[in-house]
Amino acid sequence: MLRGFRNLADVDLAPGPRFNVLSGDNGQGKSNLLEAIYYLGALESFRLAAKDALIAHDAARALLAAKLAGGVAPRTAKIWLDRAAPRRLALDDKRPRTRADWLAATPMVLFHPGDLALASGPPSGRRALLDHVAARLAPEYARALADYETALKSRNRLLRQEHADRRSITSYDPLLAAHGAVLGLARAALVEELEPATREAFARIAGEELPLEVRYQPRVPPREDALRTALARSLDKDLARGFTAEGPHADDLALTVRERRARHHASQGQHRMIVLALKAAELTVLARRLGLVPILLLDDVSSELDPTRNARLMGLLDELGAQVFVTTTQPELIRVAHDRADYRVVAGRVEAQAP
Ligand SMILES: Nc1ncnc2c1ncn2[C@@H]1O[C@H](COP(=O)(O)OP(=O)(O)OP(=O)(O)O)[C@@H](O)[C@H]1O
Ligand SMILES: [Mg+2]
Image (cartoon, rainbow, N blue to C red; front, side):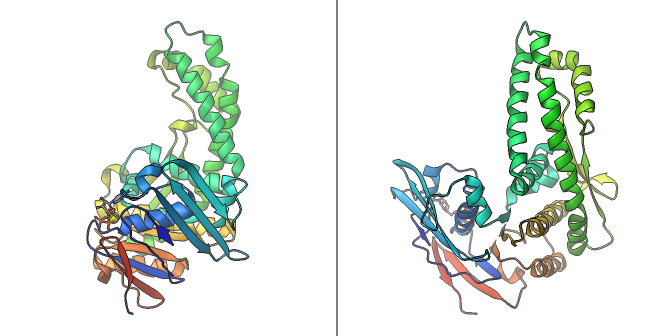
């Protein structure tokens, strides 16, 4: 149930357990609806919008509510957004103890057009994907990452000072090496898990003749001693450049198609297929490790894919077994015949279509 969210009129949706197809012309509110669903699971907007941007222009507050099935027992989630007050949350009518409690209630995997940068853009997006999944699997990871980033920021601040004291700078190295090794090892292990699922999903969509390779590519091997050595060795260069060069903050997830880097060589449609394969793998790994199949949200997934690859993508989605929400301007591209509920989004109104 949604009230006062973006351009959406009062929405009372009883979505189907499998495919939910949200179709409509440009600018009608499809992505807004997906954003609301994602916000209910992830407590953040995939457009990184601030609270006030989510509240309808002419409203003072918004309410998002959902019944969550799929876990041990059904739960209810409610979020109040108020222009004049901090956000309020309730899980089963109680304030959740931690953010992690909330996130655990409904894992979600999202694909939105901005995610194409995972294949076509710089390494930072790929690291963020690994960090996101690793943190979902282990709260210790999120802590190590936060501590690492704090130490890195402090070291970089000293590196930029005019008369930097070398000893104060290197005093951060043991911490960076220790946390850095934790991050690097966890990411490498995660990539081991994601790799077969990504490769398989990509082969399903793209066809067997175009193999995708997925590899974690650390700048420094993820071991404490190796990281300490690398930090010490690059101190002079770091001082000259004003930032720390070595460490997991500079690692990459290498994606190669026929031995060429996808970022610079793959086509637009291939970028899309690579990212979809990564997301399918994320879903598979989260489902296995959390024991709960995440909800899959796909914003404008089918454009740029030819009919054959679209049909293959739908076959793959069918097998993943998740509850899926897809937005599209062309519902005929979503060729799923069974377990399908269609909704039409027009000027912020969401209407169920007869099957
Ligand atoms: N806080 C808000 N209050 C009212 N309207 C808003 C708010 N935020 C965004 N909008 C409007 O919502 C409309 C629909 O946006 P949305 O991104 O959901 O469209 P869409 O159906 O996904 O279109 P497309 O097919 O182009 O992606 C936009 O016209 C935008 O101006
Ligand atoms: Mg949209």
